[in-house]
Image (cartoon, rainbow, N blue to C red):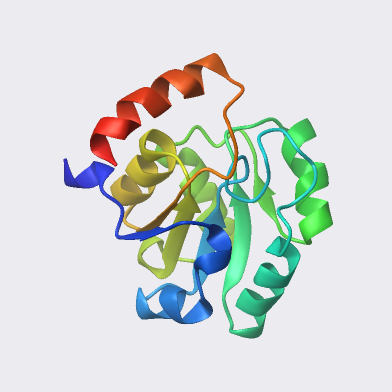
Length: 157
């Protein structure tokens, strides 16, 4: 079950410091969007996320959004944050992770995946060979399938 266990756990993305990323051996962060950076479906980032991204960049850590969501959902949000993005990434499959690494000119072992879901972010990141940072979801789920996965996650978290 180690592919379902994150390397690091944090309450919120804002609790993750540049030193945490660097100490994991990563230079790049692949960021989940919904319930990690913003409430599910929202175009407004969590208060402090823009500053968090700036702090990462000041420390030589490049971010990219990696989402299973549509281009229509992710592109305006990515523009607001000023970061590149991969949409319809098919997490936990490696497709989106590979595209993100290609955009960043990064190797899997140089990346940290940050997200709130075990069966997409953690599993995908571990299978890809990245370091994985699991955060708590910042809000309630609205999608029935994700609500179901959250029930199963309670036994793993």
